[in-house]
Length: 148
Image 1: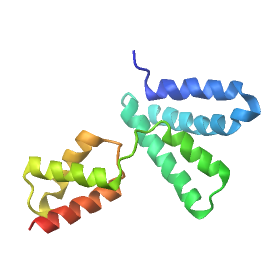
Image 2: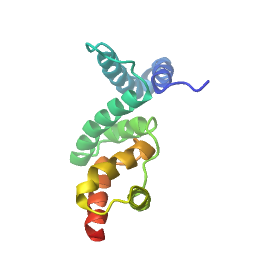
Image 3: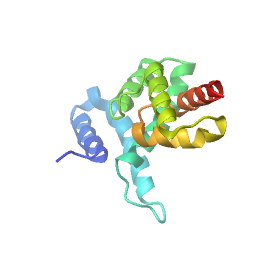
């Protein structure tokens, strides 16, 4: 049975906790992630928090760390980024995104920028979490405006 992302984070948190000072950074970061997951689960009308929801939480935490890294690359924030990334799917390169978007455009038969939403939806259903939405959106825009 494949463990869920939430179970893996819990297991790694306990392992980091047992490492003492050496695992402090990872334990603290995973503690923050676990709190965010718990907060998500305790929202009114919350649905079950599965891998998709945990990935969204990880991405938002990653975004915060990335902003810090962009301002000042401290060894701690670089290490935190690596920890969060270890739970996320391998990110596609711009070239891979471009190829995938091209495929989605021809599958859908999109011909104009007005169909951007369809293309984004098609891309996300196949490659959820594997690419930065901003990059995907720019490539979709670019490829659809060239086709006209």
